Length: 336
Image 1 (tube, rainbow, N blue to C red):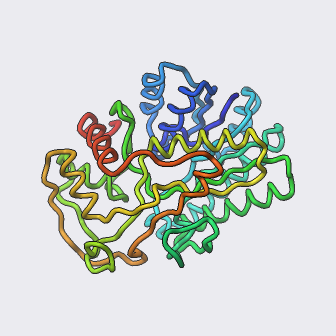
Image 2 (spheres, one colour):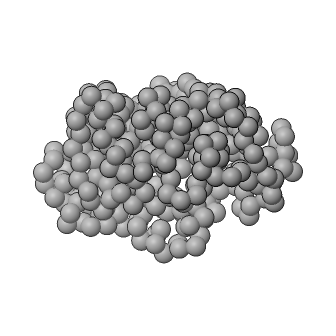
Image 3 (cartoon, rainbow, N blue to C red):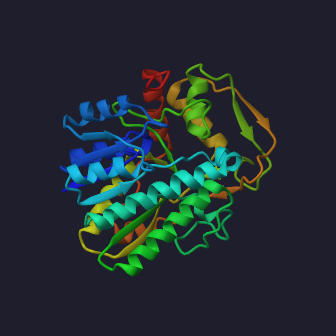
């Protein structure tokens, strides 16, 4: 079975490619390297001891993407490729809408043209916005609060409508919570451009000496220690969730929407202390004011994925921190 992985050189995509190759799938990657590195794909092949096919293609370049469908016999698509920084999406919303929506529309149109009807979509818990209930269930209202989240919600709706109009399509939408960690080999991990937007890579870059201190945004939330609480999920657990989605697709499920998370939250200080234990380093930090739009806590009800995909997260925060530190200490400048 041949799987087209868009954005396969990125953080989540590269780890998913490892799992796919090790499970015996043929993997075809398209990526434009806007937020990724060719080195990650080389290392994916080193880890798996298997080869994948790669095309440097931007999904917004429909003729170039068409060539991939012409050359390869694709059975299913896992769609990661997107611009993904929440803050940046607020500053340049038109670029986010243009890239994320147009790329997905091109992909879906070509899938229809070439008879490919199996689709796994990389969505996000950002579609829930400020949730009405904790833990968050798949039935919770979709009400994103930023352009990035809106693009994810809009693509979800596009896929829901396509599947309703074409019942032979099988669509699995995976709403991720907070991916962290790295492959246990230390060869691939998160390598953000510039200053990281997310907590774990920021902490790890402080620990390795690239950044001076961690900024903790707010200590007066109604949480265990006053800092924000989030559901962090190990990247390998998340990658395996995509194999579970492909297994579900083989049963012709039509449409399925699933949260991928651990089902519990960790505060910023709990993560910081766990990382300090994993790295053996003190992590300097400074408490500053809350960020606009941040919420006190967010964590998943992942029971639906457990029941219908036979999937659940295996690793806790200690393992997440240990693997992140191994990656960062082995690769202090990421893939550069």
